Amino acid sequence: IAALHKPLIISSHKPSTKIFHHTMPSTKKKARNSAKKKSKANKMKGAEDSSSPSLSSRMQRMQVGGRCNGNHGLVMNEVGMTCVPFVQKWLQGYNDAIDKVGNMEVSFKITQALTNEDAVWGSSESIDWLVSYFLMTATKQYLNGNIDMAGVDASYADFFNQHKAVVLDKTKPKIDWHEVVRIHNADKPTLAAFLRERIPCTCLD
Image (cartoon, rainbow, N blue to C red; front, top):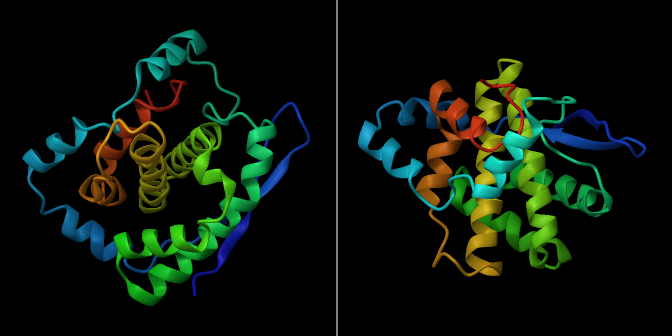
């Protein structure tokens, strides 16, 4: 069973809250090697689907003007405070599942089932916060040179974003697991492009 990292401290105007982060799933390196063999066509296809950044995120990026407090757009508000326990359960559940079954899609579904009673799943505001949180952690991992870990966190952000589109907004028929896997296994340039378009700061420019 994968252990959790040391607590990650998130700064905000309110008292800091600690969130435990995770270690890289054991299948990650094998997946990255497989991803390198994918064609350019597959990469371009994934870039055009519904997980692309919204107009509001682009407008926020323009308004921020590149300024960043290190949280890359994440705001620790009341919604975030309620999501912290869920994040801990999600990370622990996914780590346990991926170690046992070794399949990413199945692990996501197992973890979702384990946390299914949590009110987070039915709240657009909560899902938006989770997307922002995992984009923040992915960006931090990327800037620290931990590309594999950045891919894992970015895939979480993509999954929750797609969940909102499918279940809450009903703008998409089903989750595109190929896209989640594509982001999970992304190489450095692909990952940088994915994150750069979704965070309001210019830290990856």
